[in-house]
Image (cartoon, rainbow, N blue to C red; front, side):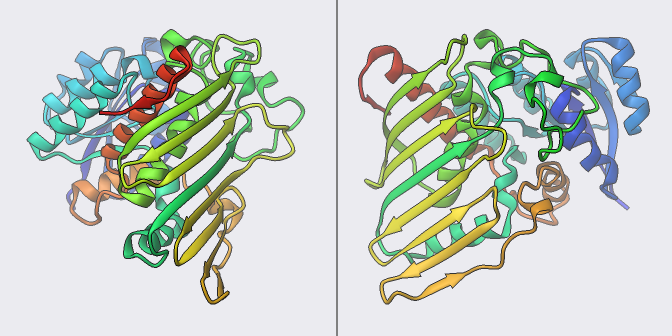
Length: 357
């Protein structure tokens, strides 16, 4: 049986939480190498997840023979250089969000992958849910008529990360939240709190999800962005409000914060067209479609365990390389998100509406 020989570059918190378990459990994946800067830690991760090689540099990884694919799961400040090196080496790539620090870097990487005929994915678990796939079908089939407006509210428990707190303080007294139990590896305390490493706060860490989801649903491009941030006393943005115009005229309002109370987080998506509307709550796994005749189609709720399919990106990388599944989350969605991210940051700095050219 043909196996996809994979390496994971940046084998830290999220790689050991999602990508490495996904590869270990995929019958057609072979984990060849893991990379992290500390040699002892790299060897421990390799031993625990069944990798053949423990590496400390990207160069060491890319010198290995027989590799087919690489997952880039390091901090955002090195995504571009590492992904470019892997693509230049001829590897299929799954890259974590935020895809890069600048939009130009993201666009360049997408073009390079297309030129080389490689599978290139952005890590977007929301793109693999049954509701997301059905909502995309409805939007793109014209079932909503002409798309007019989208409203998004996305909140999460990320404030402690932006404050640079130790992991045990990030989630306070609530240790049972989804994906918030003590991880195999905790993220570095500066990975999210230092803008030179993470790019920013909520705009890079979480709005990157929501912005890519806009591209996933609509297939459009961003045309204009006006934004406001509140840093809540940290070095990065914590509360974000964006007004976006897509290239077909669709108006988008997006509110996002990492400082929601630990009792509740939301990912509400409301899509309004001239012939119908879609109401989704991604964290709760609910979706409805309403038409002009007041017909309401309620879709079966997604089970709590499946609302955030964090193993799907790595699984899809393997299946897409083998030709057994389409690329369900192309990196062009990440480039779309980077255009919005960069424009939002520019809007905040200049207090102006930014036209994306």
